[in-house]
Amino acid sequence: MTLVQHRQQPLPESAAADRPYRGESYYGMPPLKPSPWDWTVSGYIFLAGLSGAAQALAYIGQRIDRAAYSGVRRTARAMATAGSAAGAVLLIIDLRTPRRWYNMLRIFRPTSPMSFGSYILTAFGGFSALTLLGEFVDGRGRLGRAAEAAAEKAQAGAAVTGAAASTYTAALLSATSTPYWAAAPRHLGVLFASSAVASGAAALSLGERLAGRTHTSRRLDSVAALATVVQVVTAFDARRRLAHAGMPERLEQQPAGRTLKVSEFVLAGAVPLVAYALNRRRGGGSAGLSVAGSVSLLAGAWLFRHSLLKIGMESAKDPQAQFAFAQPRRRLAASPEKPRRLP
Amino acid sequence: MKQTNEADGWRNEAERTAGTHIEPGRSYGFFTDTTLCIGCKACEVACKEWNQLPAEAAALTGMSYDNTGALSATTWRHVAFVEQMAGDGERPDGMPPLQSRWLMMSDVCKHCDPAPCLEACPTGAIFRTEFDTVVVQQDICNGCGYCVPACPFGVVAVDELDGKAHKCTLCYDRLKGGMEPACSKVCPTESIQFGEVDELQERARDRVAALHGRGVADAYLYGAPDTPGATGGINQLNAFFLLLDRPETYNLPMAPSRPAERIAPAFGTGLAVFAGLALAAAGLLTSGAGRHR
Image (cartoon, rainbow over all chains, first blue to last red):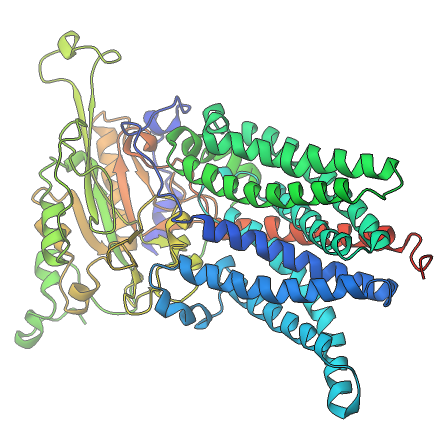
């Protein structure tokens, strides 16, 4: 009650708090603590995107032409099962108290991508294992038919949870206070989705190419190329958005900034696009070009995740990045103040 | 309710030391008035002693009298020293004797409402106590470290030695015993004041008005409702401050924001683009399908 009374008389304006930000900091000390993540987390994000997109593409292929895409489906099912299992292991290795990994499933918290992501990964891994089981039965007998039907149903589940597994990781980064990730949540969403589809298609194409199925591989190359175009365009626009949010230029010039650029625009950008385009001109018959494009794309997709983690951690330690990002006009424009809960 | 009998006397020690009756179900916090801080660091020492926190590598930082540097897994109070002199890097000769401005501020976990670290914690190790404070349960935490980048103030940290996240508990154990936190109890100038949050906010507003009346035009609150620090979905900081310069001077953000508000834009956009690409892929995978068969 007292609070309400006091609010009627506004606080006097402060001369110090009202003047614009002029680059002040506390002896240049880091204003934030960087996330304690290394290659295990970037590896997981890469695997989740790759496997999730592969299962979604396999489902689409299955709906279009069962027979033509049976190889794609088999690869996707095996890749996703192995990928989600390996991803889970990587995440557990990353814990500082790994023996308590099961506490991740102790509660469900919609405000924490780390929490709901654990459930997404669990569901995706479960669906993928079921789909893989379908590859080992021949569909004869009651049990065989039931297993095949279950695998069929699970494929849809794997496609949906796969979409979630490959994109929730954008929220995992954006829903922190790390300025480089927090300043452009929508861009991160587009980047992670397009990069996941590109790497999923590239990995499946690689599998088809190695098995000598050129016709499916060629179409998968087109999917990878389209997703790559979306990724490259968004990466350009993300830089504009980050500069607008006051991200200092020096971040881009650090090693992490340079590898980020190389991965986004060269390894997972220009190289696969040129390789796929040249191959298309030759009628899609060149296995070498297709394989080169896909391998470069996959390497670039992981390096993109890894450099993005690193540059984010650098931005957390940079007072200019954090304080320019955390200025009122931007926050007010981004999220209007909600009505306050009275104590 | 506030009656103190013989048996209750030691149980509600805070009534005598802080003028506050501690009982579950109410909101408690700190009001740190930096105009009263003399930089004695008694709060840092009391915190380390009570919470049995180990010392960190001792070295001179060159940052005025601040040799602590920052809050960490084993440092839950940190006194910042800001020496402001005439000109940029010049000797303070240009100023009248003893007139350089020396800002001192005892920093601590803000026990935000809502708390980003708690909202990020996937195990439920971080919880809101019956005193409306935010505490990490050491027997639950598995050291995933997601609370670390979630904190908009760089407070919580993971200790590599024991593999758990640590931060100020607002002396949860002392509150349970009716005692005020160690740092506020030991503060010799009442720069750190412990009490019920709305009562502290009232006191702080009066203090700002009084300071402005005395010509201290820079004084403002950081973290009280409708002030810097309580922005972007963070309603208030249960440990709030009275500051004399821009927040960045003390290593605090002007407008922190609640990370959870960025889940929907990131995840939603990601799913939408994934769906769009899947549709396009359906088209691309169809073209000429079956021709081969």
